[in-house]
Every structure is written in C-alpha cells, then in structure tokens.
Amino acid sequence: MTARLQWVKRWPNSTIRAVSFLLVLLVGVLDYGTGTDVSVTLFYLLPVTLGTWFAGRRTGLLLAWASAVVWLVANFLGKATIGHPLVSIWNAIMLGLEFVTVAYLLGALKDQQEHLEQTVAERTAQLHTTVEDLEHLSYSIIHDLRAPLRAVYSFATLLQNECGNCGQENVRDYVQRIGTAVQCMDHLIVDAFDYTKALRAELPLNPVDPAALLRGILESYPAFQPAQADICIAGPLPAVLANEAGLAQCFSNLLNNAVKFVAVGVVPQVRVSAEVRGDRVRLWFADNGIGIPAEHHKRIFEIFQRLNPNYEGTGIGLALVRKVTQRLGGQVGVESEAGQGSRFWIELRGAARS
Amino acid sequence: MNTSTKAGAVLVVDDDPNDVFFMHLGFKAAGLPQALHIAVDGQQAIDYLAGNGLFADRAQHPLPALVLLDLHLPGLSGFEVLRWLRQQPQFQSLPVVILTASDREADKAQAQQLGANEYIVKPINLVAVLPELLRVMAGRWLSQ
Image 1 (cartoon, each protein chain N blue to C red):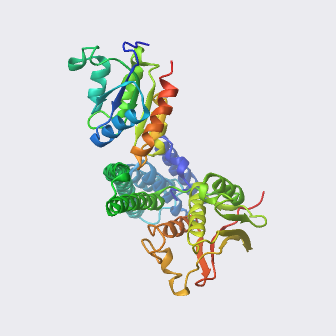
Image 2 (spheres, rainbow over the protein chains, first blue to last red; image 1 turned 180 degrees about the vertical axis):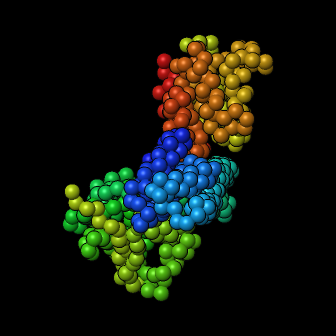
C-alpha cells in the first residue's frame, strides 16, 4: 500500500487531515443518500486508514470518532432510528470503537514499520562505515607490507651487483633466491588484494564487445605479443552482458595461464572462440599447454590451489576469474586432459542486439 | 622561479629511510649534480619550503627546483603538502613528482587534481629503475 501511495507521503500533514475529514463527510452524505437499507459503514475505514497511516495515530483516532458521529448524524437525518434513540447512540459508540481499534492497530503497524526502516538504515550506514574502514585498512596493510619488501628486494639487487665478481657462486645464488622469494610474496600480496577487491567491487553490467577487449589486452601485455605467443581470435565474438574492467581481468588471467602453462620450448598457442547457447554466450580459450588431469578440474578454481610447483604463481588467478564471473551472473569451466591442452570457458549472458 | 643554487636543489619528501637511501644511490648513479634535501614528513616538507625554524638558512636549505613527494607520510599526508604548496604563489609552478607505493586510481586522480606534475608508482625493484627514472625526471623538470 505504501509503495503505491508514495505520492501521498509528500503531502503536508494538514492536507492529509483535511482530505480525510472531507472523505468522512462524503461517506456521511453517501450514507444518508443511500438510506438505511444499504450499509456503507465500511467506507468510513478509508479516511480512517488514510489518516492513521500518513498523518499519525492521533489523527486516526480523531477520524474514527468523527466517522461514528457522522454516521449517527446521517442515521438521525435519515430517520433510521430503530426504537429508542439511545440504541443508535450505542451503535455509534460501538462503530466508533471498531474504527478506533482499526486506527490503533494500523498505527502500531506503522510504528513497527518505521522502526524497522530506521533500524535497517542505521545498520546499512554502520555496514558502509565498516566496509570503508576495512578498505582503508587493507590499503594501508598493502602499502606497509610492500614497503619492506621493496627494501629487501632492492638490497638483494645491490648485493648481487656488489657480489658480481666476488667469486662466491653460492652467495650470488642465495641473494638471487632472496630476490625471487620476495618478488613471489609481493605478487601474493597484490593478487590477494585484487581478489578481495573483486569480492566487493561494484560491477555494473553493460554490453561488452569481447573481441575489442581482447585486442586491447593482447596489445598491452608483452607476454601476449606474436614473438612470445600465438594468440588468435577465431570468428566473431558476440557482445556479452558484463563489466568491462571485471571481464578484462578474467581474460588477462586466462590468457596468462594459457601462455604460462606450456611445456619447455613450446610456443604457446591460444585460440579464443565463441559459442552461442540460447541467450548465453560461451567464450572458449583453447591452448596447447600441459593440460590438467580431470580430478583437478574443480580444485583449480579454488583460491590458493596450485597444481604444478614447476610454474610460478600465487594460486589466485583462476579463483579470481570464477569470483568475477559469478558476480557477472556467469559461469566458468574447463575441459582438459593431462598433455592435451586445456579449453577454459566463461559463459555470460549475451547482450541483446539493438 | 627562485633558483638560488647553481645546479638547483631537489627536495625528497619520504618517511622510508630505505627509499631515501635508494634515492641517494639513484642520484649518484644517474650522475645528477643537484643537491638532495630530505624531509621525512609532511610538516617538515612545509617547514622546509616555507623556510621555518631550522630551515631558515637558505644557503644551507635552498629552495628546490623539483619536489619528489611520497603520499603516505606520518602526520600531514603528501596530499596536504601538495595542497599547501599550490596555495603559495611562489610554488604554483614548482614541479612536483609524486613517488608513491600506492597504485590506487583514487590517489592518482586526487594528486593530479591537486596539481601534481607526474605520478609514479614505486616498483619493487626501485633501486634498479631509479637512476633512469631520475634522469628522465631531471631532463623533464630541471632543464630550464
């Protein structure tokens, strides 16, 4: 009721009161006009309800008694008094009490609703503050964690430069390992942060042209250049309903995996194609990589799951792809066997063609 | 522009002693003749630029021709330093290069809006890239 009568809410209380009392009088006239045989008492509930809900319980109670009085007057004027006049007065009081009950219950309901709305608003505001605080905190943590890593890495680089001709091969090796470990931790921090960002980032949906998005990604990453990898977009890719930034992250993660997980000496080949499935579009990323045994297909999309220690990684890339795709209302999956390459897919809603 | 020293001075505002150390190394490796002056927090940067207290002696603490400014600083942030700086008539065209660990788009936008000339994110291999980076920055902002 409130949803449809939103416009009434904008009226000042005095207007609502005036309209309600006018309605009571109108029903009274109707009551008088229709005579005693036709009962219209239920119509008095309309102004009572209106007044109670939008102008408060006190107005409702006043309207309830006003309705009873108007009913009594209409009855007297219509000469509909049965027997003793006190009977009509008694009936009017009973009617008034009925209206009062309705006004009272409705007022209680309204109070409850307002209380609930206020509680929700307060909690939402609290939640917003908490989320903002957490966001700020995580940025600070990232910043503070990465600063010492930068120092360790830089000092490792300096040591390595100093030790270039020191003749102690093992020292050079140790220093290099320090650098690699630190870099790995830095990636982990950045990836974990990206993942938490994907969890809470707003991802408004728009029609996205996957081919244009892919071309942009292919141009901007050195690892996807023709000399490093052979990546082709096969056939037209229909527009999908997605969020460009989110989808770009998914695409680059899938392509990164496709060019990373190849056998030594193999030039990565990736073929991106589309398959229309009803109102959805499945985008395939087929590679010539090392493949994934079927028993691991589920695990690879979970966070911090890594299958092959010979390849660098944080175990976050595919988890991020799955999380973002889910938030875009889509799904991800893989078809693969060990040694046979992998065919990853992302399925999203197609963007209705205009 | 007030350039009281021959080669010009550079003011580095950074609270991380390691990064300051790398900055010294980078300047040396880049072969830049400018004197490096350090402020370790926002208030000190403002005091330096305004010539307050300890920094009143301009022979020792010359006005810089370039400021390398970190954003996350104890007390007054780099943003506040930048805002103050652009409010001073004599520093309105002083080149300010933001050198920060933050790659937040919001930080970048705010820095640009406050009048930063460049925004550079500190990479993990800071020491390796600094000489070249400083050479480029010096060529771009100290050539006049």
